[in-house]
Amino acid sequence: MTKARTARFQIGQIVRHRIYSFRGVIFDIDPVFNNTEEWWLSIPENVRPHKDQPFYHMLAENADSEYVAYVSEQNLLPDDSGEPIRHSQVTEIFIQDESGGYRPRNPSLN
Image (cartoon, rainbow, N blue to C red; front, side, top):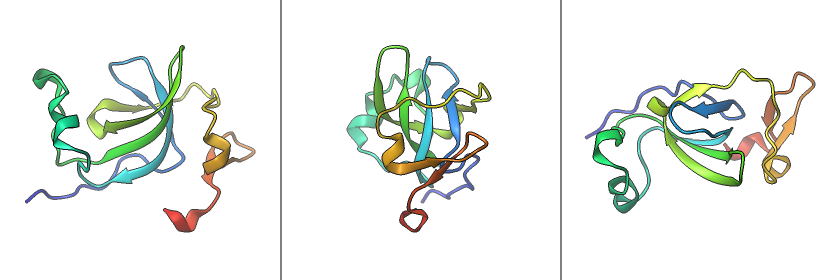
């Protein structure tokens, strides 16, 4: 049995991947891995994350595209660039406040 840890990041926070060149805003958090075994095994073993940590659902973007990503906590860092997220679904899920942060449109869903 795996033990859930407290998530280091929060919904609405902008983060970036520590290895790959993408960033995004978190819209949901799983306390431990909650994806398919096939997905997990598709990650090369030498960089495969542990399952007993929070995993984050993100509206992600890189220089070329926008997509939804599922990323382990160990692979995320805060993004302090101050740049907004351009992902086309951001306005469906979030309201951007005056400080540039993101708040869920419907907090009761989280």
